[in-house]
Length: 385
Image (cartoon, rainbow, N blue to C red; front, side, top):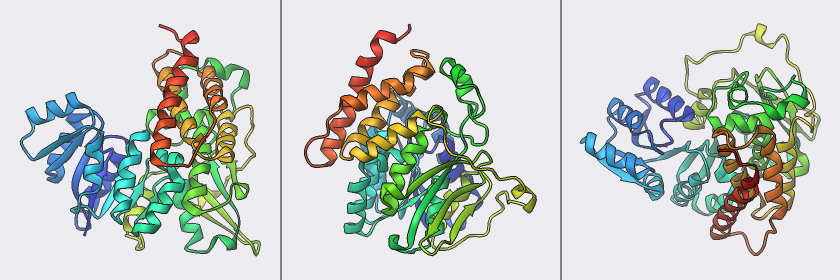
């Protein structure tokens, strides 16, 4: 029986985790749950699984929860995420919160030698170098929940980096893969959020449309697996069945395939090193009849290019890229800027940043705050409403 703290319990990954916890009640016990502000959904989940410790980042939501729920303890604020992550009652922490607030609980869990099933990509984008060092010192472990990184992890199967010639992550291409590039800049939030294969949260879905999400995943792969940037590639694979390919030095290529369902990599992160029997959807041979791959088009993938720049710059550049993108996406979803403004604004902030000094948690958070402010300054002349 593994004891799990689930951070981000009301989002898409959180819902998948709750589904698995329900299916494996003899193997998974939820000991705590956290969400940003959806107190109603969090309380329903707590009651369904008998959880007695919950946390809400939003103070007003925490107050509502205390008024309505007498089933246990209600923590509040960003610090509550770290409190749950470091709780000795939890063996495994599923970090599925969205945004840079996921970094501190990841550090807290790893510092105490825990396994982190990591869906919060911002943790590794912001501080991958620091997190790997923390995990090595404490004996903690990051197991990726992203389908692509889970695929790489399974393909590597413990082989040393020296055996690897190249790692390739796949990308669906997003909602505009076949659309005339000249018409994309005026796309509405409704069009952007209509992803062809995956059901995800709003920010990551927007990021898939610019392919900056895949760029973030390249940065993650650099630190999760210790693969140098020049040995990391991306290909467009619209079917989203092949999630990753690893080419070894002897010329062999190993690929990981599964249906596009986030419960598959999440189950692996929870069950590792075992594999638990599941009733999740399966691939049939007929599903493999037509698998296509193509090189990303830079015109359609500006975010991928920007992420490459940030990775090469190193230091706090990835943190700046992430923060600027997070704020720009929020402005777009609020209809304050056009879709076509997203990447130019992010590029402006990244270009204005000059990484300085040693990389520390404090310098990362300072760069994050600077980038958010700088993005809003840059967006002010074009903000609508």
